[in-house]
Image 1 (cartoon, rainbow, N blue to C red):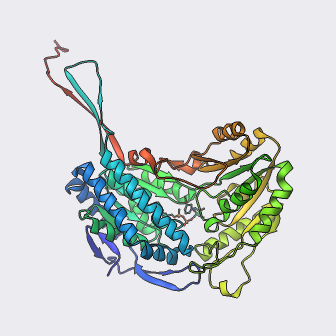
Image 2 (image 1 turned 60 degrees about the vertical axis):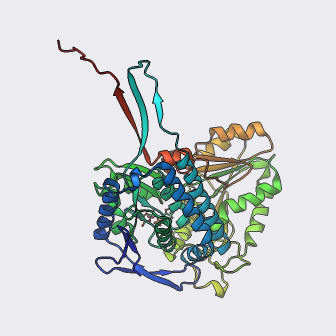
Length: 489
Ligand code: TXE
């Protein structure tokens, strides 16, 4: 069966384009899928436009839209094992982690299902005049172009698709060209749940050819993008001529601030998961360890000892705790950042190389790496390497910790560890980031907003604001007893 989903039909790319998908863990061929180009993208936009302008979805009662999202959650739970396996083959991610992702994805659909069904965002405005009925209603934005990356393919898709549909929009989804399979499966589940044709459309393919039309075409009203900073800037510029509404989540270079009075064992443990989870390919990865000077030596020694012992392997290796990078090109980028850091004076404490285990030779693996004695002007500290690379900087007091934490163009997330509640809250409130964890790192819930400050982007996903992102507020004013105004008499 072809893999592009346009106007409720599965079709092949008009130009016959195909792409091979390989598993990053061992290079095996997972599948060959259709590869869309600009013509397919425009056909998908036209189908979404038609479904928005004339189809039933935007005017389907909110309670019914919410029920459909809940049905999708049920179907995601039913198909969890197959979805997790497909996600692991595309990404190289451990199967158990893909399973956790699928639970989170079902929860996301369930949350937006109940939020949509509950309604309650419209409101009556008191004008003080009983002859006026004034109300603010919320309507869908229109046709949404949803562009997603490869690190959490279906999760990041769910954060966009669930609220977009909940609000009554139609959409064209373009997942990363590297990880298309769970998006294909989601289209089948949306159809099975009863979504009308044309409300959901899927194109697969490269950013420049299949993705760019979504950012330029006047038929698209809004673009929601999760990906890299450079592509985000490009999308913002491409969306300007048609003044599209845009939401951008562009990753981060997130500080994990550890004070000497922190719970030592927990802080060491979380410093590792903050950065080495999914080989650092996490937008909220705690890739910058900021450590109080007096704790530095012991803490870094312990982090390094534990980083050296992390078992690495493919998605189905139950011993493994972390896996490969997404591609050969991405691994080369990570290596270049480490080399640049070393050239600028960072001290390599562990890693800094590919594993020498011959069993891993066909995958894009890179050892958990700790670079000590870093400074915030180094490119390995400033830029998102998006690999298993922890940089260590020292601070002497609270003010210096905050200054270092904020010395980045990004502002997605950050962590602070301290046994002093007052100090932890002071630092948290001064951190310029969309999410701050105190004595923790990484957790999120669908009820709480997610998104960045500064160049991590704008707009929010999840939470009530994650639904509002896909709505337009409209003020409807009704004069109940119009009389001549006489202004020009
Ligand atoms: O991402 P891109 P890449 C960061 C991370 C990584 C870097 C580059 O630092 O090393 O980005 O990764 C589509 N018009 N993040 O190159 O290009 C593309 O096809 C429209 C952080 O893989 O941002 C894919 O679907 N679409 C991040 C999506 O954009 C375009 C997660 C993301 O790809 C396009 C991933 C264009 N001109 C990488 N060009 C996070 N925030 O979590 C590309 N795309």
